[in-house]
Image (tube, rainbow, N blue to C red; front, side, top):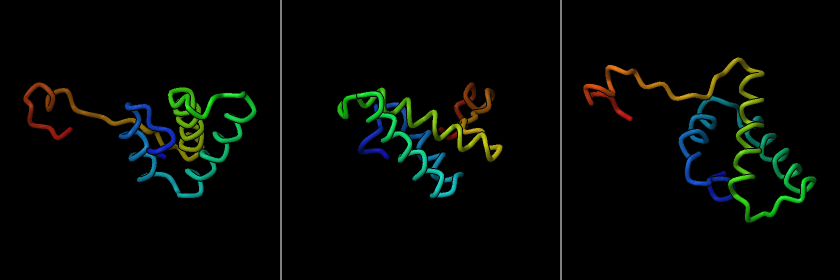
Length: 85
């Protein structure tokens, strides 16, 4: 995923998705993304567009399982600089 779909902002999202979703869901999202890239004539070099498509498919799989793929940092940890980011 990181080689083909990391536009510089998605690494944490992909790591979280990989930790919480079954491999079959990740593979399904990648397959559907590859098909959407072909169907919509998106350049294989347009990593930002491909990453957006993949994120949508991963979120769809996660939503179907009742999983929200969002990092949560407590405000008091941020303010006191004690939290790990």
